[in-house]
Image (cartoon, rainbow, N blue to C red; front, side):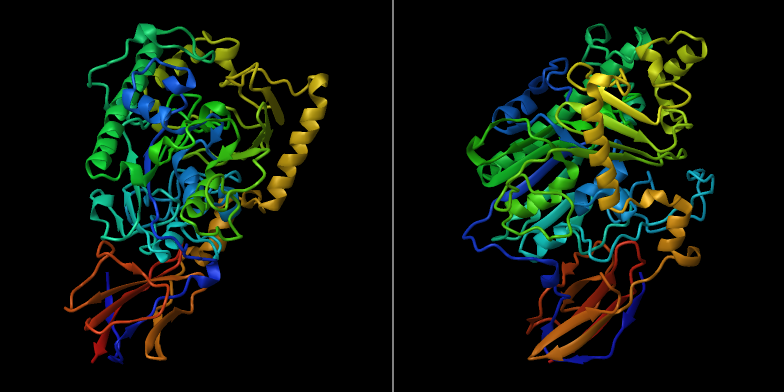
Length: 561
């Protein structure tokens, strides 16, 4: 990265762009609990504590016994990047323009921050899509900035995949070496470990590993025909879950050996539903419903919770557990902690737009029993012929069976060439969402209720998908050029250096150093949120960053004593 040297600044102070306007309220506590996220990819609630004991998961089983087990937890989108954008911001993807999978290669660490001109994808208007970093509303921040401003040491190892390049102000460490073990003495930590062993790609990447679950013993959902190839891949999925369990056990053992197990709130969840065909990318329970555990020290509050929770609720909930009042702009609601909402959710909302090269627009609402779907383009097929997924043996087999007219009834439902405008499912009687009861007169009242709820949600969040993606990109990047964050400005007031940026919504990172060097994104940028004084450092490095914008050049300020 380029480093621009500024004129020497007389004074011994530093300031950081304040987060006070964004609602940060450091909690007044003698000791704050650590928070650990053990996340994984692409699994549904196919675990023993949800009633499916096919995979042997002793570590997760024990964790579940000590945890709140949420039985109705849902992702907002059935695929990685849009779902993760909701997690990190507390906002629904269609409300901030992050609903299309995937915008670019910013999916790990700080991302590539490089954007090719075009991709193989087209939007609903048939226009080509270029790579981009989504420019989200200026007031929306990664929720970890509020934690950092409040004194938490925040690490991510190492998946980001937010639909925008992660700002350097979001994490103290964001790499494959990031860990709570580097937390400074006296600070609480918020630490994320993402486990990829259950990802869709491991269905073919792990084919040579021992299969610890017998294909003859796996249950098949109603939308799969009886077939040996399909059984083999379903068994691979369960075998991957057993590998995941071992990795989770290792992380828990590390925490216990450090004496921090009873000083840490532990979350376990998957980023969306399972990796198998008609799971991932779907707006049904098979794509959105996830396992979700929260363990408090001492196993406090352990039990089962049937209230509805959404991934959009995660950001405000973590802030609430840290004693920080969630900012009012967040669309999610805290379900734990000091600022837990008094009224539980009545509905879950979900969306489906572009998945790799195929575009559509689908919206859903679900209560505890019924799921309602609105297909904005019913003339488009239900099945998307996504190239990535066809690396899986069972996907090739399903296509072969379809082409030879060997699928019928439930097994053929996914491959229907057009969709009805609306769908309604009774999730108690029809857990695989295969029997569309939209025309059932006995359900007319529920249909009217859910239709109204979904229409209101689409309006309330100002759903950006009413605009084709190519037009939305032009609005974010006028003329196809990524906007750039302005450089940080320094000023001296009351003996302290204050730093600001003319770009609305920009955050500022800083490094104080006794020596001159060339920092990069991994140099450990501190979040700049309050003016302060330093009497030792000789050099101050600054970087301003706005989500979706290119970062400004790193600037160096010489501090004169």
